[in-house]
Figure 1: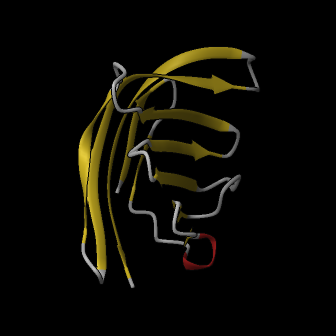
Figure 2 (figure 1 turned 180 degrees about the vertical axis):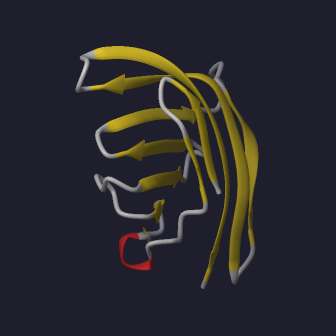
Figure 3 (figure 1 turned 180 degrees about the horizontal axis):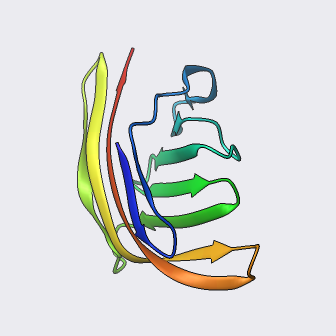
Length: 118
């Protein structure tokens, strides 16, 4: 479930894109929808250093936020990983967004709840 409010809005269930979701032992990419598509999409990344990246978009409207351990973040949340399931929820308040049609920056609030089964 991807919810975005502010400069642009999204309130939709977005399906996991299994072909674009991968893990290489050091980093994991969970892609929901198709990156760059006109339809809502989200990418959640995890690194071995416990950084979390959250990108939400609809067409060219996009926002990027994340969590870096030891640094102040706009985002809170957690992920749970088991051998067969990754699930989590992240909320980001006041994340920067960009609208290339108007060349203007804005702010959005992001709420993402996700699962990925193996």
